Length: 253
Image (cartoon, rainbow, N blue to C red; front, side, top):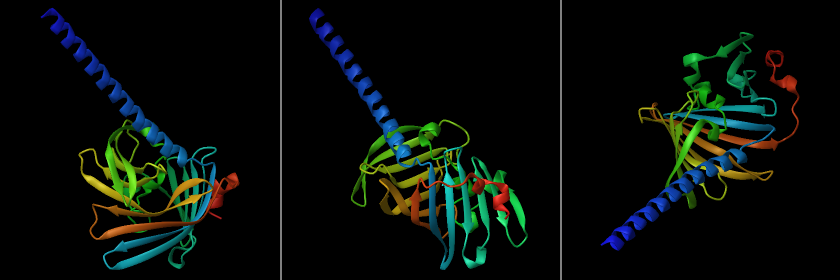
C-alpha cells in the first residue's frame, strides 16, 4: 500500500512537471512568434506609393498617396495625397502625434482625442491605427490558441491581450503564416469582447528579403456595407531619407 502511494505520488509529480513545462514552452513559443513578426516589419527607412479604395455601399472612392517613413530616430512618417480631389493634403506623424495640412485653407490641424478614432479620409482605417506602434511584443501578452489554415497557408492562431493602456485595441486575434510570419488575418476587439474591425491580407510579396503584405482589406464592423482596400507599390527599404522631410516646415511648404 505504501509503495502504491509513493508510485501515485511520483506519477502526479511527473504529470504536473510535464504540464508546467509544456505550458511555459507554449507561452514562450507565442512570444517568439510575435517577436519574429516584429523583426520582419523592422526597417530604418521606407518609401512607397499606395492606393486606398474606400467602398461604402455601391460607391467607391479612390485615394492615391506617396509615403516616406523612418524608425531610425523615432517613428516618423510623411504622407502626401496626389489624387485630384485631395492633391496637396499632407500628413506628418511623429511618434504618437499627427498633423494634417489642408492646402485650400493653408492650415495645419493636429489630430488628437476622439478625432483619432475617425477614419482616414473616410476609410475604415482610423488615425489611431496609423499611429499604432508595430512593436506588438512590447504592447501585448500573447498566447497560442491553435493551428488553422488560411487560403492554404498553415497559420498559428494567436490571442493578444494588451498589457499597456496606449493601444487602439485591448484584444486582438491573429492568424500568422508559419512560413512568412505575416499576419494573414486579424480581428480587433474592444475590452468588452465586441468585434470592432477585421483585416485580411489579399496579396503578399517578397521585397528586399522581407515578406510584405502589399494588398490588405480592412472592414470596420461598426459601419454598414463598408470596407477599405489598401495597396502598396514601388516599395523601397533602407534608402536614406533627409530628416527635414519630417518637419512642420516641410509639411507646410
